[in-house]
Length: 563
Image (cartoon, rainbow, N blue to C red; front, side):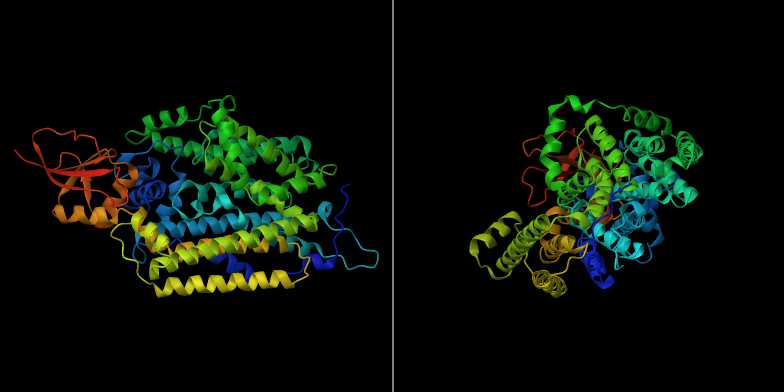
């Protein structure tokens, strides 16, 4: 019998829905709109989605950016963005539609985490102690308070911030992983609904991270069926049905992919990529995760450790069986990975959120205050620095900061954007109100510790992506290069690409409608080293050279064929 938590009714004080939505929107919306695709993975992901939306069904099965293929664990990562682009082409620019899909994926992940925590916290084995004269919280109220706190902690997780606003793998992987965890939890009350959700998410993980990652929740389910009484009563037929879903969907994907030209080669490469490389024998793998896990999972990991220690003798509860085995098996998966990546840590974030969320009620006041004061000081300082740097770009004072910004972006005009300024001001006023509430309030609500951390990280992101978004967009966009190329090439001419990556090709084609092909009258070379010599014969003559002003180490050279 699990020892009940010693909580009183004030601990489940309700978090106003408007406050929760305010933090979520302040976190999610900045950085999604009003900018170009950014160089790197953001532009690559968008290019593949854009190609899918405008191509045929072959492009949906073989990921490529305007004909340039991508060796990737699977195409599922790009499907949501492609669907939204195709569905909203009459309403939104394609790049903003792709980022709208990111917002949907974050919303589904948040819903899965909230409802998963809500269902777990309502279970009898984690309910607060029954009071002699009543006054203990109702299971529904307690579940809601724990779910609110856990969701706020997930928003405060540092490692999710930047990539959660780009067209990259992380939002999709977070959604699939959170969905798989929710499927296991839902099965305790509604077995067949949980089986379908769990199976569907396993398939999505297979076609995004690959077989090794998909085995993690499968092995977790297998162990839970053997060792956890909460899942044992479901019977093995439940797991068989749950695994039939991804098996059937994978069979359909394999048959469809094999039926198209080049599909068999893609499947062969996909199978080759599933082989583990025993990363635990490499010091780089250990070093990467030891350096990055503490900040990536802050503030989840200290709360999760406290939870585990507090409940170490009472780990038969469903939430502790689920999270313990998921984290143990998941850490083995990290060390077996082909290369250490942030997306692998994103994959393991949902069980940490579940464990930390259930630990908020048992968090000691001292640690809670430490996390709060760290958030208050750190995010207030960061916010002040962002305002100071923006003031320097607008007024020229302090001159050293203004000069540093100008040097990084030669030719950029620092303009005042009233809408961005108003949004930043409202976010700052929100932070001031939250800080004032936290200092004055003696509330012991379950979600109290997560409010400052989540509001603070939302504030910093909102300020950065409003006050500095035009500047960052100038640094990370290929718009200037694309415009110069457009001026050199006739409207209907095609360009043969040499050395362009997925992100350069996607950005240049999208921003100014440049067409890439083969055997064209124009050739565009990308030379990452300014000392590199062009690789062309005498039938080509140079008509233009350029680069992004920030990047001195790159060069684009445009040639025209002549006989």
